[in-house]
Length: 277
Ligand SMILES: Cc1cc2nc3c(=O)[nH]c(=O)nc-3n(C[C@H](O)[C@H](O)[C@H](O)COP(=O)(O)O)c2cc1C
Image (cartoon, rainbow, N blue to C red; front, side, top):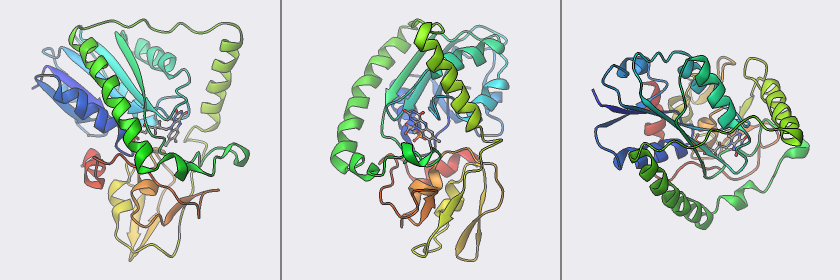
């Protein structure tokens, strides 16, 4: 068993690409999907470091990440860090991470945020907040630019991690910052998957390839002949189905016919699907 473990969750590959990049710069490291059924069994008394790498969802932690953390039990001290990828508005997700780890009796030694490409056209936000020119943000040139910047950031993080550096953990803000914090908490509660039902739609350009079914991290999609069907409501909000569809046939409310889909160029649909195998 490896002494250093990186647990990851990803919908469109950004977080997996970061995990691979960090992992390849370390020795004796295993990359384990948080969705893997026996993921927690990789942690043992020989574990020296644990990293969590995941996307920020609505200024918060994705549901599978929260569920994963709630099952972590450490019997010995490990160097614990987290790296969150985001699309430009990370909010105060480090506070939530800190809070939830504290409940498990775990100290977060280091925390980093990496701005990458946004993988959602803000499909679950109210219409007036929607940016309908998302496709302009995800041109090949802009993707290339962002990903190069990301690589520089990763080198800095890797250096810190090798030095077992401790980054200061943000304190809950005061004044207007505190108000923002509570507003974000409220936004999170409103968009909580147990309440929000994210509806995907499929149009006639669907070719029945079944990629959406393969990448769905909640096994929500089943092919009915040549058409995908969302057979239950439980959703990780990962947007993998929406972004990996080769025909852009899958839409989400307000965004049905708009162009523009993104997934990390080095991460395939099979890589996403491998998380739940
Ligand atoms: C449901 C959802 C909510 C998101 N919320 C935020 C957010 O609040 N702030 C932000 O900067 N990016 C947000 N994003 C963008 C992702 O954090 C970003 O694109 C991330 O790198 C995707 O990582 P992945 O490819 O590993 O899934 C959101 C994405 C999704 C799908």
